Image (cartoon, rainbow, N blue to C red; front, side, top):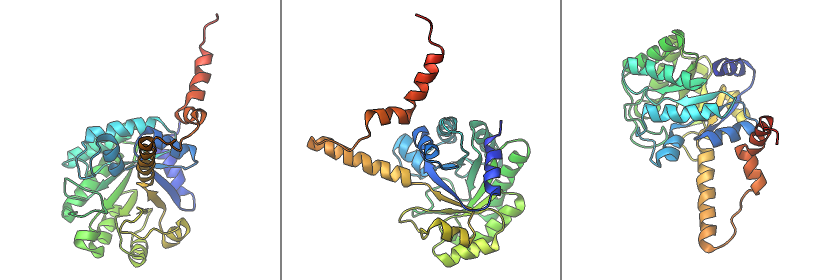
Length: 286
């Protein structure tokens, strides 16, 4: 059986940009797969909202994130990227986090260089650790991978905001030298910064497409031309689900019918047809 990491390596080896929606639970991950996407991203922002209804400000623990990830990965067959925040502590914590994410079924783990507690990359108050500590985290992650954790390492820097684009690019270059599989320079402010990052850092690169965020939201073809390999849309499904639930609640409050799926469609979405088929295989004779 091909592992999630092996599947992801095969996808990244193919030409063209890969589009990756974000999920927050098993249902949203399954919808991504059913829609025909080849990979998905477990967003820490979205999981924090879904699991505890709190902002993405470092409030979730390693255990909560890996538990959510285990359910997400079990629900689909496509590779899933997992938000690993800062690695949850020292170099040894980072190694444990990488190994735990691999056991949970993730194809790739994202690790960042923010000061703990971290926060969403497109919100205020970000700060990053020094370059040496940032590199230590990625070195530990790569060591865990090379010691047998079957998972890719995506090294993220949030240095663009507090330290500038030069430092952010330098960190991504150093991450690649250490052996990171993918780099992610969070929140470039314009197309020129995006082009410079892609020109000066080799290897696969991811761009974050957050609606109304700091980075310009561009069509996939333009992102590919700039040099990106992956475009992630981490909050779109969370965003539209909150909007739809608010609209449905308003309909209920007014005593009006809400716009809903037909019941057969709802049952199909959550897997009743597959369950009934499997149930029939083991039905005892009357």
